Image 1 (spheres, rainbow, N blue to C red):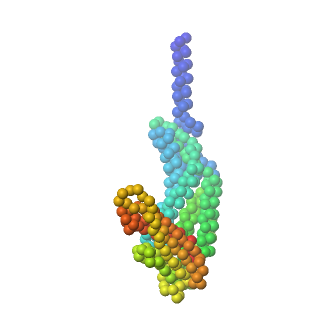
Image 2 (tube, rainbow, N blue to C red; image 1 turned 180 degrees about the vertical axis):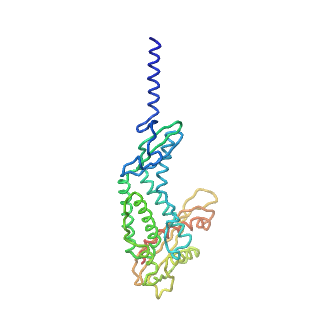
Image 3 (cartoon, rainbow, N blue to C red; image 1 turned 90 degrees about the vertical axis):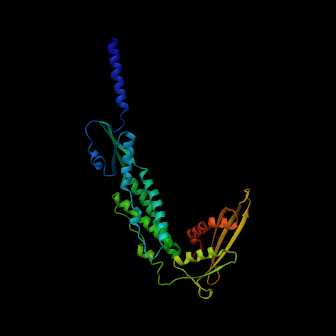
Length: 321
């Protein structure tokens, strides 16, 4: 009788252990068709990918990684912009911005990936990952719609200042549209062509001229950087008589409290005020940076590049055409 009881306990224990090793959708019976052809394990409304591993967790991770590789994009080879429009540095900056943005958008899509089925054979685990196409298409459509709104808005402003942003938006939109087509959608026609955007820099209206006037306290190196910034995006620095815009530059350095012997702390502020040829104020841009150094010059050198970078990013506040 005791032997029979021990046998029953053993059978139950083995059964429980066997059950605990399997989760919903997992089997070690006949090989599923999706093992070699992932799409055969999915409905028309799904996109699928499979992965394997020594553990269930590893198989799940590899299946999700395989799904991610479907959406992988070589950003650099996908970009289009006129070679004469931007410097190598500007192209790199645009590429970095696009890469960061696209990765963020793709991550949002991949958050919807789920493990649909699992299979266990010998010492290997296999997982089938699925993504709902309908939900993903809806998300991409919304993202593209927002980009189109921003593209049209900046284009209507018809300002060379927005040329880099327009190129970035156009390329981001094109890449997301490719992802949309990948999911079986016919794609969404862009409201603007690349030629439309590029023509802003080489429009028939000619090059807008700017008279640049800096106060005496503005560091000479900062003057040169600001002047180069505007010439790089298509403006011409000229004398006051034939300028479409007057750009007044001021600079302030304010010493702050710093209880560290041998070092000083400053807040540096650069302000650009744009006026029309009639003297009407059209826009103001002000940027500040705080820095420490052994003296004022040392502290300024540390934030000089950051000031220029922030000015460049916010040129739209000047409302120049």
